[in-house]
Image (cartoon, rainbow, N blue to C red; front, top):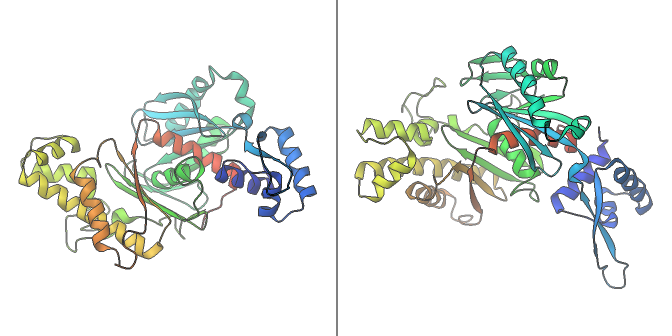
Length: 379
């Protein structure tokens, strides 16, 4: 495994998409000679590679940029958010090299055995990299402990205090780390995606349920019990609709896709997808319009609260494909602006991106990559 200074170097290179030895020495507080020695070791180990030559400042000599070498390490990701469960193999740049799947089981031992039996399928086309597999990440819906080892609770899977990382590690012989889905997706965006050069950002995932995660000062915010960022179960409507968590009026009961579709059924609307509800709203349905306004206003209000509490560099909203292309997305953005303190309204960028079949498994793999490159690095 990498030592602390090597992790710092790779993290800096990744965030900047390339740095010179001089820039690395300045960022790490080391002499140029010391940095040259460490970089030489990392070049020999295959973790970094020399890239473009850039001109020096003034009369300075040209510098060689160092970039992460994609083939330096590989990671497995497992998503338990779909049935069948999805597996991917990624390299050190986050590129997906192969995919596989297996029937999802809610029995931990059977689940671990299925993962072990499916793993070889990922390596069929890449047998030479088996020795470079560093670790496995597993993502699921639920609360995860601070060591990324125990599923404290998952309503979706019916689990409580399941030592899932150890069970899978025993079956596969790999280092395994588990993570909540939204936190895994935030790590993926920090490591490989839209937030790689940011220290503080907030991610909101909108789907069947609502997820939330934060990076603060470059670190994933976990909280004392692993529950930091659970806006899905923030009370938005006192004495409102009962929630599966046992409370009433949670954001999940107002703005999740499941809640939106349930409200549509209660209104007698014959639709099964959010896209169909959007189409009804465009066609003049007052019920469809009212439902989308209610959901979008609640989600926007919750995000506005996050902006005022954290003041992040960026809000990222991950959503189902085309879910934010219509009225819902418009109302969410309007609600954010309407509910943020006027002095800071409009100053926090909001970017949206759609979730696809690979999203969660890749996010899971990024957890293992992040542990390799940064250590635990959470609070």
